[in-house]
Amino acid sequence: MKKITNLLFIILITGLSFGQGNANAKYTRWDVTSSEGKANLTAMNTAFEKMRAMGCDNGLAWYYQGAIHNIPTVINGKNVLCPQYQTSKDKLWAWADCTHNGSDSASLNFLLWHRMYIWYLEKIVRELSGKEDFALPYWNYGSKEVTENIMPAQLTDKSGSLYTAARYSILNNGQPILPDQVDQIQSALGELQTNPSFSGKAGFSKNLEIAPHGYMHDLIGGEYANPGETYYNEIYQKEYSGLMANVPSAGFDPVFWLHHSMIDRIWESWDVSAYGQRPSLEDLKANPWPYEFITPDGKHITYTMEEVYKIVFNLDYKYDNLLYGSTTPVLASNKTASKKKIAFQDSKEQVVWEQKIGKVLGTSAFSHKVTSTFAKSTNKVFKSANSKLVLNLSVAVYKEPKDYYTVFLRYPGKADQYVGTMTFFGVAHDHGMEDDHPISEDGIKLNFSYYISDDLVNTDKNFEIIIKKSGAGDAKVTLEKISVTKAN
Figure 1 (cartoon, rainbow, N blue to C red):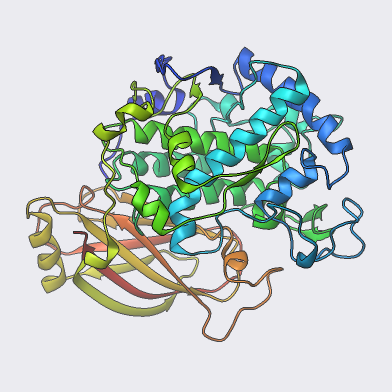
Figure 2 (cartoon, rainbow, N blue to C red):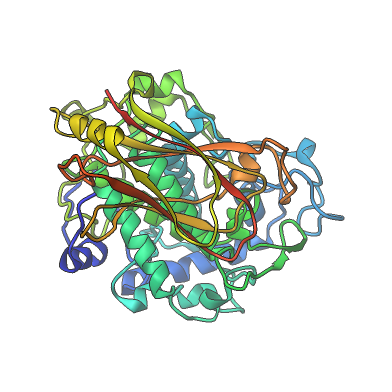
């Protein structure tokens, strides 16, 4: 989509204190570098010390809360952290409920479920820490300010309860995210800003889940280290990638909560912007998901989709500032009628053109030239009223890649235009193939889709689709097909 200037990126990332004015907001989520954010991290450290001391069958325990997100299907050897759990048949109530299984229902509920999940952790920390105004701080990674790309000191303090050794060594050693990685995060944030749909395969929710969400999971978990890093993963109880790089162990790393507070902030920023849309309640009821959590007094609570919808769009918290220059608060429940709730339906897409490829994406940039008829067909739809063009990349993988791929459009004489990123966090888990085992001769089929209408140039001339690999992984990724479709 259209490039955002450096000045806008500074505003986009660092933000201004917009004062959202949400009448329902009793709490404020602060940047971890602020004095308020640091105070909340101190409270979080106090709470997690108590949570780590609890038995894993206590619903408030660190282990129990992490397992609500997910848990390995089998623990390597006797489980020293939770004797009650050895294999998936031992799962306790609400364990492994997260929205990571590759289904349409999972994708639609991804942001809503994680909003509820971290909201309940927030309540538990408030109770255990005694800090009555506690709210989860967020890690503002991707900032132009180098200091904001450093993992908070409370998480790298080996004597604290927020530390784990199974993280990207650069971050645990107090160094900032590398410049090229920051650029990648900023590009993803910029592209998300003008996404015109909440759901669907090219929608905001799906693309946010890919990057920066999945990108940061793998980055923190050491997947993008060069050369690759392995650690003793205390949840799997073996040498493996970091906690955050694996769906079944991610929720056990305390940085998970700061990461998802940031993801929630990105969503809220878009939701209240001119581009933001919401799924309808009918969409969610047609694609239900279990919403089961533990209250601060240890009781079980289950929500209907109607109850979830009311809570996630009528929050009791706000952020100290938002991205994208957004100044409007999340709408109260009595004003939701003014917010669009229509998602584009993939089933109504019209194929503009498609091309079989059948090539492995290597270390050299892949280039596919869109020529003659295909370029003209693209431009014809591009010039039509309300054109919403989607670029689709169909790929096959044979184990979970430890790389990511950046997608661009290239026109002669113009700078490459960022379109999106392909990341692979959770692929093995989503398709039932844990522990990096080979998958099958045919591989796992994946699709990545991106809105490209405001990336295109009004011309019938040839252009190129460029895919650049980053990382030192050896997993084979085969690009099987490229297509362009028109949504609605």
